[in-house]
Picture 1 (cartoon, rainbow, N blue to C red):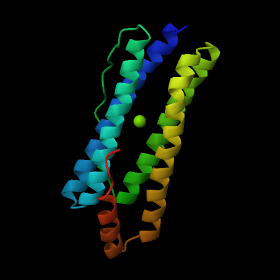
Picture 2 (picture 1 turned 90 degrees about the vertical axis):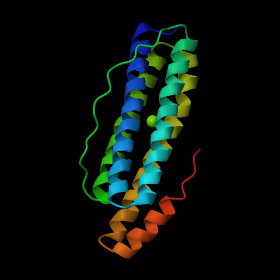
Picture 3 (picture 1 turned 120 degrees about the vertical axis):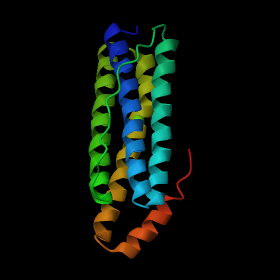
Picture 4 (picture 1 turned 120 degrees about the horizontal axis):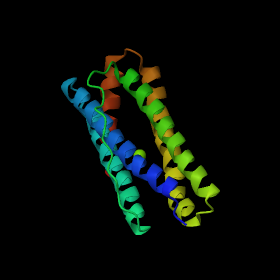
Length: 164
Ligand code: MG
């Protein structure tokens, strides 16, 4: 059974995933004007993935016979600090998303809703990847410190991220 409670939280999750895309697009633009084109590219790829996550929830809600209820999306921040500050924010944001996915899973377990648990398994795995990616970049940025040359090289390497 697909409970009203889980349907409501999954609808909210569409908004959270859309907000993630907004946040990463805002970060992308920040990097563009800072001339860190590789970081900007990485963020745009990330934003595209978040839209795909939103659409997975959208389709699943419809597949379970419920109507999608699109919630208001907040405005993301406009001002960001250094690349290190940005990736601290990315990691914290992804940890919040993980907590959201865990909440959904918890409801699905309580409901004995095995179809939703199966659907959510993908997101559980995905969040492990998201947190790993963010913390690896964060650790690299800590090592780089204020070495401009190394930051430039790292920016180049992030520019090679491919669309998944
Ligand atoms: Mg996501």
